[in-house]
Amino acid sequence: MNGEWGGATHNISFIDLLRLSFRIFKTKPLRTFLTILGMSVGIGTVLFLISLGYGLQYILIGKLVATEDSLITMEAFYPGESGLNVTKETAEEILALPETGEISLVAEFPGEIRYGDSSGFTLIRIARPNYFRLSGIVPDIGFPYREDEAGAVLSSQAVKLTELIPDASTLNKSFAFKIFYQKENDVNVEEIELQKPLNLKGVITDEVQPPFALLPYGFSTKEPPFYKRILVKSKSIDSIEILRDKLIAKGFVISARIDLVNQAKKVMNIITIVLGVFGIAALIVSAIGMFNTMIIGFLERIYEVGIMKSLGATDRDIRNLFLTESLMMGFLGGVGGVVFGTGLGQIANLSLNLLARQFGGKPFTLFITPTWFILVILVSSAFIGIVSGFWPAERATYLSPKEAFVKK
Image 1 (tube, helix red, strand yellow):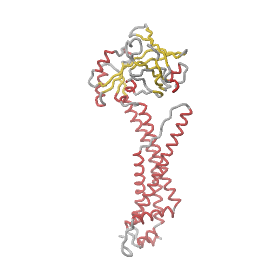
Image 2 (cartoon, helix red, strand yellow):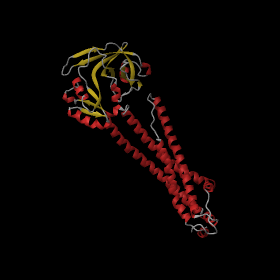
Image 3 (cartoon, rainbow, N blue to C red):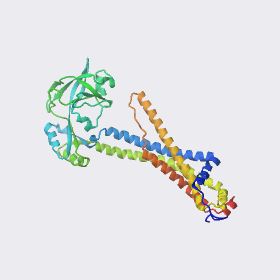
């Protein structure tokens, strides 16, 4: 049939097509609402789980890469059994390598921190200000010390040794330090006191690490006899492998953040895929429900299709009518899913932040929804609607008025 039964053919205008499509919201409001709600729950579940995957990845990668330079920086140190330490001569050799862009020496010695009448033993790390940029370690409270503004950065555990609270109120307080130098292969300890007390510039709130203090190079009365490790920044990400091989050839053990980032990305991609599979399963269930609704709708409207064709509606008009109805329900299900998924994610973020503040933690965002993914969700939901309505639309297309009246 070509839709010419009963007289001349007519094409339904786009406006009339939309009006006819919206009739389903009046004739079958509860069924239509439940179908859209089912789509919204399925799509919202997908959005919620994928947002969780992206949030976990963002938090983990953000912890590993606090600065851009730290991504192409390697931490080099000698294995403990070798008995070797980094010296200035070694640092000059590394800096002379064509692949090296920048270095930062780090010395580590036991020491003492003192504030007023309170004091305690802590680990002292001596490094230039570029250490923070190359290592990716950034104070959670305050700022790193700079070349033009010296100061100290303490861990929260080190601050507690002086009976102070590790918060913003501790910043700019003056602390005195002693460093106990011990030369290589020598049991004698040399006590070195800083030239003057240093103001606290930042606090690293990592409760897991032991107490430590980061002090600027050049503020002790004597230079460190050796260094524990060296941070080596590659000139580019393309030369990092070559530089790594050269450092390994010199006997160094290498720890690179880019390796941790790559491993973290692989793990998080797997987690995101697993979460996506669960979400897609929920989406398939809701799509089946929508397909069932469209089939039932077609069976109930066989007589209506016959009347429309007898009045001159073409096969194309009938197909477009069913497809438009399914497209609208799918798209509205997508909109509802976006509202449901993002709303649930925001509620979860708010609840977790309130809980974190209650226990003294830092606020964070666990559920992150990329804008491009929302657009993909809306397009995909419309596509699912068209697919769900395709078979009923085809059945209605090939149904003649005579068959419709007989089946009625």
